[in-house]
Amino acid sequence: MRTILAILLGAVTLVAADPPRRAPGFAITDRDMKVHDLYDYRGKPVILEFMQTSCPHCAAFSEVLNRVKDKFGDKVTILAVANPPDNYNTVGQFIAAHKIGYPILFDMGQVAYSYVLKPSFDLPQVYLIDAQGMIVSAYAYGPMTREVFEGDALIGEVERMLAAPAPALTQKKAAPATKKQ
Image: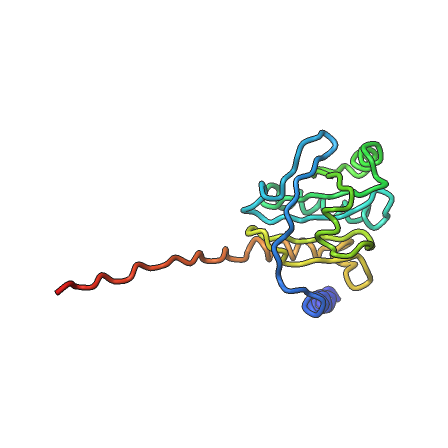
């Protein structure tokens, strides 16, 4: 059954996938006013979630993200981004209730819009960003992506990102020297 789900999930990803694009940059703060700049995480994969503390699917997904953090540790960065009406109090309660071990950042909608490219969207949304800063996968919660948000499919996605070879840097070769006559 999981194999069938994985195949269907892969097919949905391929059909719905946009061409690869660079992850939009941002620098926003967490509850402790620490600034998190996406560029600072270049060199390792990033899981970027857009969430709301009142969203039951976001609460379930926090358990998946905690499992990812436990399994991969510092090999992967997890960042969650809360949008209004969330505030310091609601996020603090969410962190305590779900034992969140990754930062939850505060956005007024600009960062979310730069990723989703729509004025309104359902939550949660998750973006997998590779070590070079490219969005490799994006998922919105729904029946076809439930295994990502509530199962083990995200762990498989992270394993694939970590196993992917880094792209080779192209270097220009010097032209051979010509003999002067």
